[in-house]
Structures are given as structure tokens and as C-alpha cells.
Length: 122
Picture 1: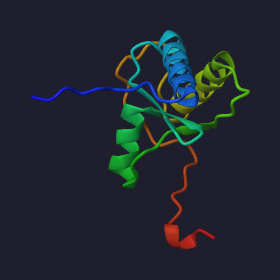
Picture 2: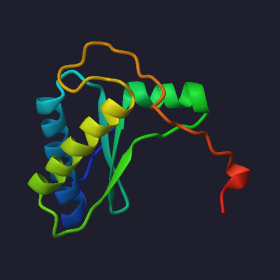
Picture 3: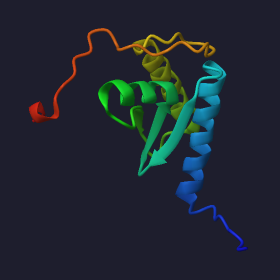
Picture 4: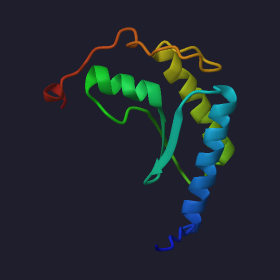
């Protein structure tokens, strides 16, 4: 059996973890019970809703759906959490899920959605 040591990382990583926790706590407060997934990749914060992500994967064949908030050191955890709360609510509404506590409502395709084929991207 081996011991596993997890290091905190550098100052920026510690700050990112703190901000991610604040975002998660804010989303949980405003939209309790929703299956949010919060992470940092590079210098951006990525927020996914597990049910919406699965819906997009199933219906569009695309994985990793969520929203991205560009993260700058000057953004406070409070500001980033507020921006994520607004974007999270907009994403819920776009997929037909009411804001507030999660009640198991299944996502639906957003109104006016038009699928763009990759070969048409320029």
C-alpha cells in the first residue's frame, strides 16, 4: 500500500480553488439541488449542469456543454460567483428548467435552436 500526498499547488491554484468553491456555494444557494459541476481549465471557469450536459450529449452528440467565464486575477470570488449565478439561471431557462430548487424537470431543446454542421463553420 502506498501513501498519496495531495499538494495545494501554487498561490494561483489555491485562489482558483477558493473561487470555484464560492461559485459552487452560490449556485447551490440560488439553485438548490441542481447538479452543478464547477472547474477551472487554464484561466477560465467552466460551469456545467450535469442534466443539461447529458441532454446535449444525447441529442447533439457533443460532450462538455456548459458556460465559460473568463477569469482574471482582478475578479473577486464574489464577482465571479455573481456572474456564474446569472449565467446559470440563463442556461436553466434556455433549456426549459425553472430557476430555483431542482424538481427533476427534464431539459428541452432551446427555442429557436438551429444545429450548425461543423463543415459550415468558417
